[in-house]
Image (cartoon, rainbow, N blue to C red; front, side):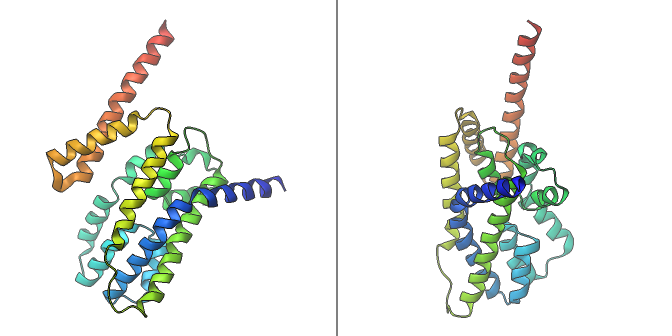
Length: 236
């Protein structure tokens, strides 16, 4: 009974916390469904991708590779580049809080940019596994719901909707703002901004990869200084 009560509380909290993500995911997945439908891909493939792939940028990319019949090595390389940032997410994602094997596997599968940003914004408190599972499950449900709506709209609309692709950018702005307000120390945001500016001037064509690499170097150096400072305090 206690587990059911805890799960219910975690679900209600997750529903409330994921509302901003849902407001971005549903329009974005509608756009994905409309775009991939325009390429002639059957509706059931488009829907299946939202269940088993569940990767926004990669699903948009899939709309082009399925038409161009891209080779498997090229698809693998493109997938690695597009989702390379997830390697860094795993370094600080609270996977240790998820003990149940099924939920642990699902937590790794359903890790997205918005889910990571949402869970990372909860200061440094450990979140229960029911909350983490609920957040990820609800976020994917938003994506699937939007896909279904988009597929249904494709049969009605006669032309594309311009500007809907900006939804993802707007969502990141809102999540970054929330992260800024909740954190006591905003050094990570400052380092991220510096890394982004440096990447823009160094190699704008490879902006994301360069920015992530610079930011990782900043974090490693910063962690090194903190470790040394704590070690010196311990010695004294």
